[in-house]
Length: 355
Image (cartoon, rainbow, N blue to C red; front, side):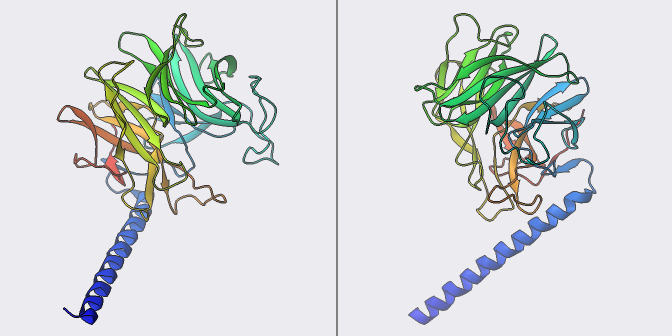
């Protein structure tokens, strides 16, 4: 084959690849349009929210699921099926009309974090002794980062500041993304990361969840990742976590496992990645809880970028909520599509949970 023929062949292959990519993007756009009026009620189209929902975390109260998300003020949404979400309340007072995105945020809960520019990240709600307890990251700067606990008598009552669990230190400057974990022996823990320092840790909580258990100490899980969450299934602990920058398409959900809560964790491996840099649904991660429906199927909430669904705000790419199903395949929890096939990419279509 001469050089001219080789050049023409490569050009043709490049055009075919570009056409295939264009066709896929058109198909994804059509799926995004189809989401507005899903004809098949047995499945759900991702994303399941058409609003920004970063770092979603869900607690069930009665027949309702309540989702808390990163932002100021912390907004609470509710759903009966994990697929249709409506605004319910603000967790506490928010910005004034001149600060629509929380610039110049203050400390309405009087946690002692400071007066200005507080970032409110990754709320994790839990029902403990009939109270609604929320673990929340307050980030002011690299020297003033903390995990606080807020508590309310019920979902409709005012939240009040209860305690500060972690404050940034030279050894752990940025404790953040605390997530509640209840083991099957009744002991409860806070799983948290130190993204800019030494890694992810777990530490036992007191019975009321408002302080650490007396004599407890942090146990190392793995290297630094965001949004650590632990789930126990058939005697094996699953530690889900996310790496890379949250604003990027290559934000990735990873998984580490261990048969011992305090040691022996495997190195986190990617389990959910973007199909390509051009995929409209990409950058899935910072998951919330795994929830089992009445049919015994397991679903996980998380956020993902969905280009074209919500307008960008400057360089910030909104992160609506998506649902992903997990299934026991070969004794290991694995993400699957709506047909039950294993997948390593966020799916447009998943089975509809049944409650």
